[in-house]
Length: 203
Image (tube, rainbow, N blue to C red; front, side):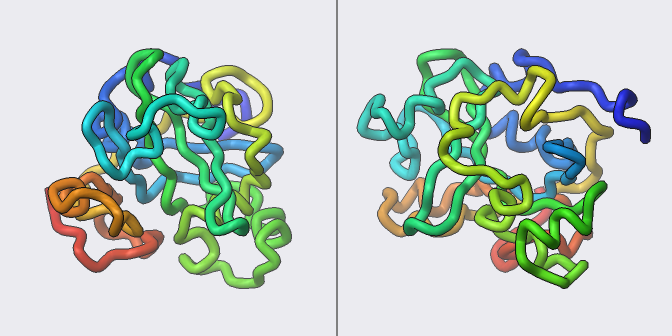
């Protein structure tokens, strides 16, 4: 497709419950500077009463982008190394977002490899949220960036996917048992571009 054939997702797409948005983000596209990724795996962090959510203790300088408006990037630094991309959801004033866990390349493979310092063309290139941050060359300064507006990082529409898999989220051992076990990690079925396929089951 030509660059002009892609349509930005509207803000209304993100102004829904994080789990609903997470499901619908599968198969959608992320674009920045000639690189386009197709989203293949996500995690929902819901509002309220999700003990795995960064907003569980309220509004802070770090998590402010999660509180909206919907359709904003929330990039946080994990372990001082990995920049993780989330997209804010729900209504403004509700701290919720979807973490982009994995994707597959659509355009700009050579640039993705350069940014990642990798030579592989297989799933290891983009299966993991830190790898997504590298591939899109993001850091925490991108928090609050509107992905529903042209320029910079953009979220683009694409046809819906078929079968979806669901399972527990990853790396949230601190959360309450019910939240640890909630099937709020979603992935496209039938693709190898998934970071942690174990535990995923058809919806």
